[in-house]
Length: 134
Image (cartoon, rainbow, N blue to C red; front, side, top):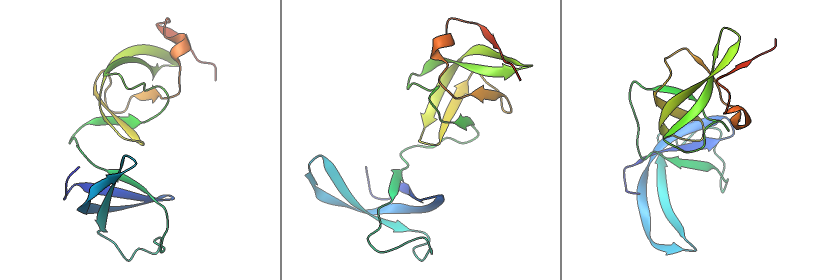
């Protein structure tokens, strides 16, 4: 972690952007404390002493294919997922890149516009395809 890294502060459905401006020198109970300056510090969603989720952006990729994060993604670089094709879910190997709580970057294995099943289908991993009923 370093000063100047961008952050995303999530308040319910609102995301506010900002950056780390100060890192406290002491660590207590394995917790690092830091200060954040928001681009929109006057946002109406902000309240004194409220608890929020803060995501520190440590890396980013441009021009990448991304899909919603879900139970289908297990943290491995190479893994199998199912992609919808003409009423079938076909198993395909992909290479995963960066991820956060919302999205997963797919480096190889799918093209923009393809529909990926993000629920856990690991019990079907031995199958090449699954027929879906409407």
